[in-house]
Length: 111
Length: 114
View 1 (tube, each protein chain N blue to C red):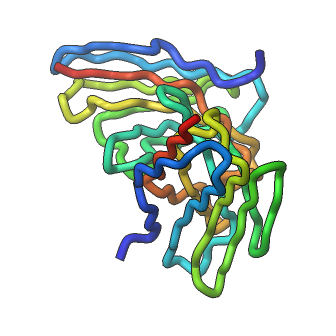
View 2: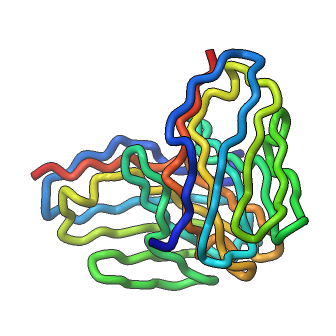
View 3: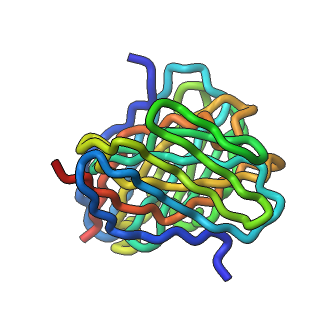
């Protein structure tokens, strides 16, 4: 079983749609849960992070962590063409430097 | 502008050649790292450093060397390039206490080994 599973997509939605992106993980020691966004031919940039569990909201973006199910989600409301990118989940146990990355989900928001 | 600067942006090497990928940051970050990104493999850690004079291996260190003589710079050296090293290379930095949630990435170096 892989430590992190993320559906690579591609996911294509119309402008204004609600987008749900998900990752599952197997390591119960993970404490830090991150979502990075990567535009084509650019480096990843941190979008949101959550420590431990619960929800976090930032504008149109909401990150959820369900530690009991080992499942994290990123919701994008009122999606825009500028949201078209690859979204990477990342995890850390907080006791070392090793980040565990998902493979990324490619999202296209069509005007 | 503050951030992580990687040079060159593109490079083509012949098998057996050596080269150095440069990475510099101006945010006074203690932690710096090198990743490679390949289709279907995701981001894989090559080497990292928690401060000047301190480096350690990541998941895929073979064929690469690093050194950290200053806080700002963290060059990655390919000793003898192989086609398997064709990839996009990213440098990332963060404060020491950021466990993945404060990473700043460079724009990448696209390397092709022929």
